[in-house]
Image (cartoon, rainbow, N blue to C red):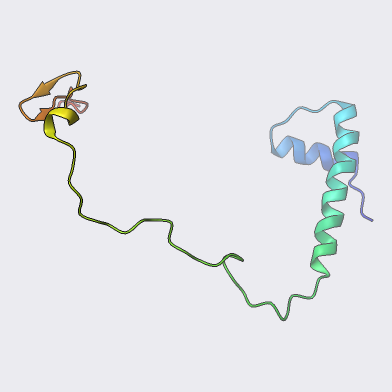
Length: 99
C-alpha cells in the first residue's frame, strides 16, 4: 500500500491552487493514497483478451427518422410572437457591423 506524504499532498494542492488546512492534508493523503492503490490494483488485471473499444455499450441511434408531416398553421405558430413582421418572427439585431 502506497501512502502519500503531507509534502506530496501540499505540492498537488499548490499545483491546483488550493489552500488546505493540516486536517485536510491528512485526510486527503489517506483518501488519495486509497485512490492510487485502487488504480494500481486495476493495472494488475489481465486485459490482453479484451479488444480495444471506445464504448462497452452497443451503438444505436437515438435520433428518430426524418418524416415529412404537416406543420402547424402559420397563425398558430405566430400567435404568441412578441413581434411579427408579415409571416415571420421579428427579432432585434444582435450583431452590429460597426464593431
